[in-house]
Amino acid sequence: MKKYNSIFGLFLLLLIVSITACQEDIENFDSKVVIGEATNKVGTYLLKPGLDEMTQVLKATVPTPATTEIHITYKADPSLVDQYNLAYYNTAVALPETCYDLTEPTAIIHSGSVTSTEVTINFKNLASLDKDLIYVLPITVADTNWELLESTRTNYYVFKGAALINTVANIKERRLQPALTNASVLNNMRTITVEALVRADELKDKISTLIGIEGKFLLRFSDNGLPGNQLQLATGSGNATNSNWTIETGKWVHIAFTYNGITGQSELFLDGVSRGNGDRQIRTIVNWGVSYPREDETDNRRGFWIGYSYDTPRYFDGDISECRIWNRILTAEEIQAKDHFYYTTPQSEGLVAYWKFDEGQGINVTDYANGNNLTANKELTWKAVELPAKK
Image (cartoon, rainbow, N blue to C red; front, top):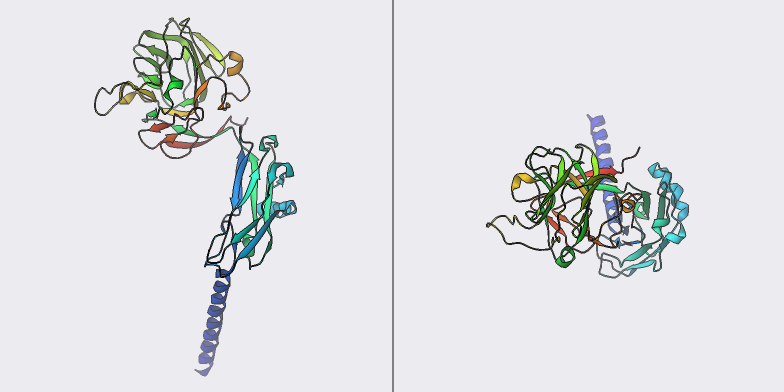
């Protein structure tokens, strides 16, 4: 019995020592400076068209209010790239010095505070980077007058190439309308180009609306007697179509529709290839920035919509991205230009609306051209994609 009591006593002693040690570790942890997010030391940023500059801020924290002023000085340390590659099984190279500035590297946690002042990292010249490489900038603590949680000492900023489009929206049974905070840019258009990158899941023999205003100027699929996948221009002055204006379902298709209200001629390009002119000349002026009166208390049927016109079943069943409106006719060369299907500069001449549909969450879609942001009637279904697809 004495033997068992001795063993139990030894076990109890070890347990007490272990608990005490853990408590001491916790106390030590509570007093240490934590740099950034303790659980996420790597920030990854995709090199997309139009991204040339960006800023990131780095802050430090302590779990309890500081009893004295704490100073933390950071530095960029390219020598730590090998350490990053070893830890994350990567083959990154150091971000060139011409691509970042760390001009004010010292942060302070003031006495009585738990959060430091911000240190700003300015990234620049990112458009010059090779999209086939992975770049990393290690930012580490060079000096501090307080004990540091070592596992948080270094943060890694990673830049790598990405597909031109990584997120799209599925708008089945959804409808989207702009706020029209800058409505004038969408009115009095005598020439127009409408673009959209779409993937239709299903186009039945019913009207499926793409974009526009019912009874005024509307692009839709199908109508009485037309196949479900045939595009039609429907206006208050008549309709125009072409038997070659058909798209395939289940695949991504770039639509570019041009219209000249002076000559009345319309033309459709699919994936950059002309499918011919409309079978009827229609002369009108396009006013898409007008809010028409409601026909009832629940539905503004005569307003501008994407994915809706007149009646609920006329939704577009599929995904959409890169929806644009121009107040001029794009040439075939412009439509066929490299990467044009997937990106254009928001400041391009004549671009009056540009909805990328790349938010990834929510019901709102940003207009990068003039701020006429879209709002959907309910949560959109967001999808991760890679466009153009790798061959």
